[in-house]
Image (cartoon, rainbow, N blue to C red; front, side, top):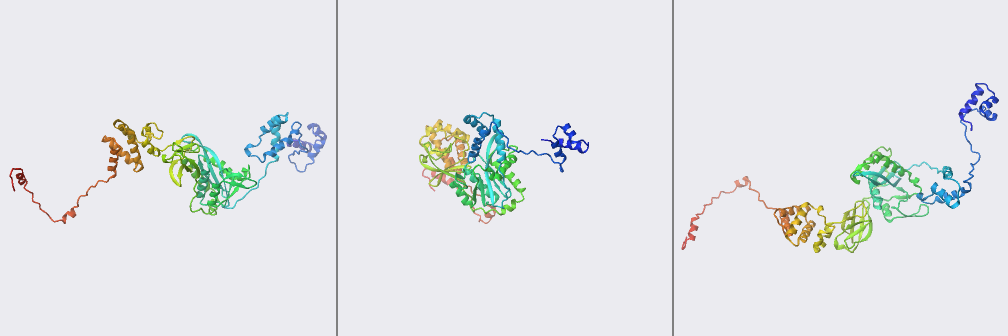
Length: 495
C-alpha cells in the first residue's frame, strides 16, 4: 500500500516539477494507473487498507471450528473457570494433534475477541433509586505487619457517594454490618441495590434473574424494605460503578499503605476519606433527600448456629474454641456471632460472651468459668491452662506462695479468693490481698475480713459548731472527792 509521503512526492513531481506520468512511474516504481489515481484525487486523504477477503489460516483452519465450540461452551461457565489461550492450545495438541504453535492460536483468539467485543449503553439513575455493593481487598500495615483487609463498599449510583468499611473477613455478619453502617451514614435506604451474586446473599442461582436467597438476607432487606437486583452470572460489568469504586478506594485510600494499630483506626481513616469524597459530589445532598427513611431500630447483624459444649466446657466456633461455665458441659447451645463478639445462649439467655478471635485454632478461656470445678479439684490449679498467674496482679501470686507455705489447702483457699471477683470489684479485692500480705494474714477468712473493712463505711462524728454551742445553758459539774472511795478499801470502813 502506498504511504502518504509517497503520494506527496508523486503529486509534487507532476504538479510542481512538470514530470510526466511515465517519468514518475520510472522514478518511483509505481504503476501508471496507481499514479493516475492519486493525481485525480480532489481531496487528499491518507490511504486506507481494505481487506477484500479473509486471511487464510493454512495450519489453524481445520481447527477453527473446534476453537469456536470451546469458546461458545465457555459463555455459560464461571468467569474464573474458562479456557485460557494456553489451555486451548494444550487441548488442540493433546486431543486433536494440532501441528502449529501457541502464537498461531493466540493471534486468532486476539482477533476473534476483538470482533466479539460487547457494546454498552450509557446509563443514568434517578436520585435515591439504586445503589451497588461489592467486596474488595487491600493491604495495610497493622502494627507494622502487612495485613489484608476485606472492604465492604456501597455506592449510590446517581451521585457516586461511596461508603467503605474494612473487616478481617467477608462473612455474613460483616456483610450485614456493612449494610447497616452504610444506611446510617447515608441517612436513608436506596430503593434498589444491585449485586454480583454474593454468596452471603444468594444460596443458589436459577434461570435468568431468579435466585434462592439466604434467609438472613431476606430478613435484612425486609427490615430495610429495599429490592434486590442480581447481575447475570459472570457479568460483573453490570455493577461496574461499584467495581470502579473498589479500584478508587484501593488506589486512593490505601496508597501509601495506612499504618494503624487496629481495624477501628483503619475504619476511622476510611470514614474521613469517604467524607472528603462525598463533599466533592454535586448530587450528594440532593440524593440523600430521596432515600427511604431508616427504620426505628437497626438490624441485628448476627449469625446464629447450634453447637454443643464439650467435656472441657468449650464450644467450637469456626476453627476456634471458647469457654463457657462448667455447669453447661454436654449441653446444646446457640452461638450468636457478630463482628467483634461471640455470645453463647441457652434458652435465650446469654451464658458467656467473648471477644471474637480472628485467627485460626485458638482458644479463649475464662478462668471464672472453671472456678467451681477447681474448688472441687484444687490440685489441678498448678497445671491447668485456664489459670495464668500473669493475667492477675503480681500480688496474687505472691500471696498464693505465702498460702502454700502455711496451709495444705492453699489452692482451695486461693480459689475461694478468686471467686470473690464475682461479687466485688477487682481493685477492691486486690487491695484486700495487699492488706493481708502486709499484716501476714494468709487465709481466705483473712482476705475476706479486710474486704469487709474496705466495704464498711467508718463512722466519724463531725464536731459541733460554735454557733450551736452558744445557745446551750452553762452547766457546772462539781468534781467528786475520790478519797471517800479509799475508805471502802479499809477493813470495816464505812461512809
